[in-house]
Length: 323
Length: 261
Image 1: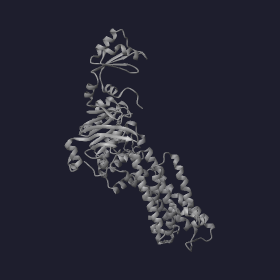
Image 2 (image 1 turned 45 degrees about the vertical axis):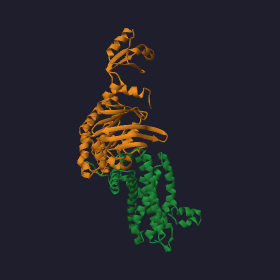
Image 3 (image 1 turned 180 degrees about the vertical axis):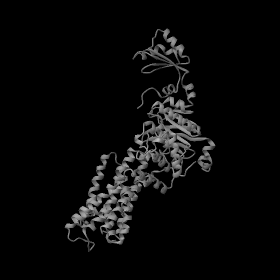
Image 4 (image 1 turned 135 degrees about the vertical axis):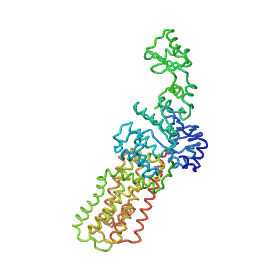
């Protein structure tokens, strides 16, 4: 794999630094709206890197710039050591892109979606046919080879989109919200496939707003908010840095949470008021529950759990709804 | 393993292959486009032509049908090119997101522009080739210059395919295509297809008709199939070449603006 590409100065650079993507003060504006406001990112070879953030955080804009289909407004961006402004086709030749919505070719059947897509890369017919058959197997779609795309279920379409993005054996695979809209079974099948790709040495860049997905998949991630990076690290590091060990969840009657928050504020490091419950951040959840009962408060339901990435996410990006 | 991105001609053949594959399923739709100009030739050229005793063109007596046929030849290239470069391109651009898919690969907007324009041109070309055979069979070809009629129809197809695809990129809904239909029908009827341009007199109207692209295509085809070729024929060739190149430039620029944001 590396032998064939070692002459390429871009690859040589990427191999030397181990960096698949480098961004410095990367910005993207649409008219007067600044979607990405200066971010620094380094994605290393072989890792699964995540972009987390609420809608409108700038994740998709960043992904489109990395996919070499959206010109950089300012700052520096290198993908596989190359500049997307001048080497777009060469970058895209080595990239796999799985967009947020399944943009499959509905005028072609399932196997032709793979075969013809491979031909767009300049891969010869025989190899395209071979890989199309392999990828149908990988996506569990072999018996659907001649089916129309519109007859596939949502999960099948997603798997076909991912299979298609692998036709050129990419070194770097970009997945924009890969499991949005899938049922739990389909998500687990997909995660398994993504793990297998990682094992095979493919570098994955994933955007998601599912925290469990990010915790499962990502070696490292950045949390984006309003076009900036709010935090960076491994899921475990982020939890350690931005949350407590445990969380005590207290559920009271409707509308009581605001008032009760003051009465338990001193029990934890921090208290969050959600519409349906209170979250008390602490290193000992059971102790907090005991104290709550001592104070004569009677929550309808309680739960002690470990902090998750979701707590980090909510803390960093706020609780207000973003449309 | 790394692959060298396709050359422009390689990209062109792959996009053509993709379009050809999709049409294998819809060959019946393809056939209907060929029949329309044949029906016009039969009803107007032959049917109405029977009422016309003598028809003089370029100083010689020819059957009226031989006058109408090259008009329909040009129109078949025109109609064929329009079918793919308008509705189909709009559908691929806005709903199928086909070009976004292609741009996730090493293909460029220039590749897409060339591939789609050439496809429209080929569709018109296939109709024209079939129509030319009909003309031959009916004895409506009167000159060896007619061997150049097929390249001429390809040129007409290129010019219309390119410009119409360019205009299509400005459309926002299917209703906007009424404007294309609104321009298509009068162009088809009044571009000296069924009667000589002299009928417009010597005023502004004639000047307007002579400046329209289908008129240039019609007279070029007519000059070739009747043997009335002069150096003036080159004006039509030049006109259509410039029009096509302008369309190609426009499509490329518009795709950049719409898709590479």
